[in-house]
Image (tube, rainbow, N blue to C red; front, side):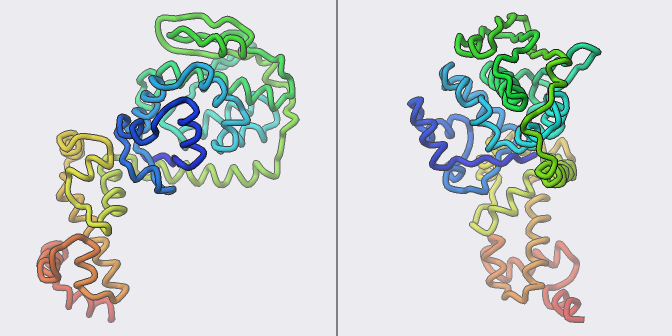
Length: 327
C-alpha cells in the first residue's frame, strides 16, 4: 500500500519552526532522501508508520495541537474536506472513517448506540498508534465538528487514551481525558452529531465522492508486498536501480526482510525483477525503440544480454516478437 506525501517548502518551514532538520528526520524514519524533491513520492505502510513514530518523538505538545486543527488538516486531507461537506456530524465521521485509509495506514473505528458514537484509532495492522497520532486525530475530529456546526463550545462526552495528554490538548477539548491502560477513544453524543452543518456542500461532495471511491478501488486491487516491490522497480529501473539492496533501502526495510516477505508470498526478488523487465521490454518494443535503448532503460549491460534474457522469458526471439507485433 502506498500513501502520497509531499515534503515541500511549507513542510520544511514547519519542521524548522520546531527545530527539526528534515533531512536527518527522514533518514531516521527510513525514508530515502529523494522524497524531499520528488512531489510524486509515496510512502509504504511501514515507512508511514515509522514517520508517525518519529514525529511522536520529535514534536512538542503545542505544535501537535496546532497542526491538528481543521484549518491545518482539511486543506491537505480529502477525507476531512469530504466530512465538512456532510449534512451533519454523524455523516461527517462516517465519511472520514470510510476514506481514512486512502491517506494513511490508520483504521478509524466507530461504535454507535442510541445515544452516542465512540471513535478509536489503530494502525491498519491492528497495532496501537503512538500518543502523537491519537491526540492529533482526536483534536482533528473535534475541530471539524466544531467548524461544521459553527459551535466552538461543543465538546465530546468523553475522551480517553493510554498516555498523559498535553495541557494544550486538555484546554482545547474543554474536558479532562481519562488515562486508560490501552487504546484510545473520543465519544460524542448523538444529539450533538445530528446538529446540521453550516459547511454542507452537496455539489462539492458529488465531485469528491466519485474521486474518493475511485481511489479506494485502486487501493484494493493488489495490496501484496510483491506488488509494492514491482511498483518500486517500475519507477526506479529507468534510473539504473535494479539491485535488491537499493530497492530495500527505498522501501525502508532490510534486504533480508525484503527477501523474507517475498518468500512468504512464494516469489523472489529476481522473479519480480524479471517480471517487470519483461513487461517494460514488451512495451518499449511496441514503441519501435532500438534494443540498445531498451537495454539501457531496463538496466542491462548490452543488447545481446537482453536479447538472450527475452528469449528465456517469452520463448521467442526479439526479432520474432517484433514480427508478431507487425502482423
